Every structure is written in structure tokens, then in C-alpha cells.
Image 1 (spheres, helix red, strand yellow):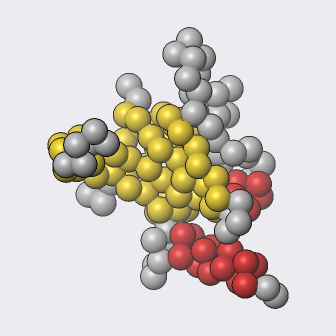
Image 2 (cartoon, helix red, strand yellow; image 1 turned 60 degrees about the vertical axis):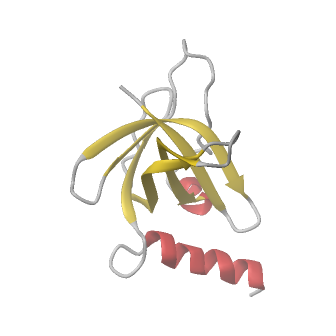
Length: 128
């Protein structure tokens, strides 16, 4: 097993272990309204401080993202989620609870796959 395969295996333990890793339940809904029925675990992030790209200063804002193994998405029959810029089209939806059990629903605004290690990071926007 090469280093890349080992790194992807380790990524699985880090992202999908819900007892000693970062594994957190995530629900994905594709633009056709199909909700994944297999459990997806990954890293979720929802923070209130971002860096203003014009000034480089920390400002109040909201940045939410999830990181999921590409192999797991493939296993459950999903394609890579992507941001859909057309506001008239249905987006990919991501749902997860925060650490206190409060549910949140987001749409995918940007998809950043890292095919070297097998990870996709989805940048999210609050969805109402």
C-alpha cells in the first residue's frame, strides 16, 4: 500500500469515526430531492469569524463547511455535490446539527474536491 492509499485510509478513520475521530452525521439532498439514506459522517464546521479578503482583518460573519470522503459518497451512490449558481435551480442541500443539537440546513455554494487524498470540502450558505 502506497502513502496515498494509507493517507486515504487514515482520512476515513479521522472523518468517519464518531467515537474518537471527527465523525459527525451529515445529510445530503441532491437537486432532484433524493435524500441520502445511508449514514454519512464527516467533519462539519460553522464559525462566526471570517477574514475579509480586502483588508485581511477578522470580521464577524458566518462560514460553514463539511468535509466528506469521496469514496464514501461513491459507496452510497452519490456524485460529487457542487454549487449551483442559478437561483432558479434547486441546489444540493446539506443538513447537520451543531454540538448542542440545533439543526441547520445549508446549500452548497462551492465544492472543492481533493482527488489526491480523496476528500471533498463543501463551502455552505444558510438555506431557508
